[in-house]
Length: 328
Image (cartoon, rainbow, N blue to C red; front, side):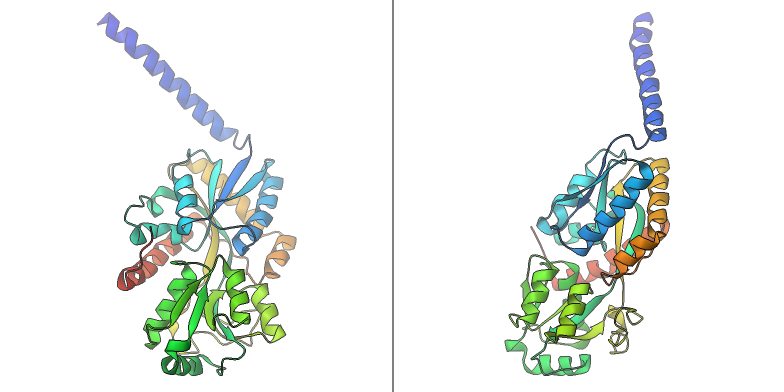
């Protein structure tokens, strides 16, 4: 019995000490740089706006927030890295939408989903927009649908990557308005090259994140915007009709830029990060910089963010299964 106690007592003391260190670490958080993992290459809206927000968080918390780009495997590289990181608040995930939540539906060998992440907050949102090359003889969504049904064998559309939201949104449009399946999908390594390809008529159409780059291409006359995929018209281009006005309300939705932590990250750390992001979104200068990118600043707390992500996974998961979209 004495020997047993001799073995147990050090274990108990060790657990108490570890518990004390954990509590101390939470109270002293952050005491070293934080990294936010971005599942895309540098230069996209999540990367650029993420860096803007990171600067404000640094000013607030007194520690650098480093943006680390880990593109590839439709986001699986970045999301698995975060999901398996220590839940201590020093490794965060930057998301555009909730694609990391339905990767396991497209790839059964991928083990992680929403339950492996804790929501922190959103900091901006944007709609997607249906754009076409200037030479396509259409000016409205209805005209585009009619044209596509008659010319499916010569029509192609671009996206920012296979199995991404851009790809899925166009496929959902095809289902909603009964466009032919023969319309070719050409994936690009990001939205910027896809927009360039549409402007250059390498592909004729695409549903891509609304951005200042698209705004410039519209103004130059190289592309034409047929509809924004949101319930209301964009405050940046109110002349463009919504997808609801075009008769396809099922596609109306905003995409949120948000940050997440590994599941089991202490609630006190999540709350501290949530409050910091909220304060950042209230900064006038930051808001103006984000709006110049055709994104709206909007803060959602963890509870509302989780509901949004759940609805996204439900919607896109159904489309993925129906179309049998798979990745490896």
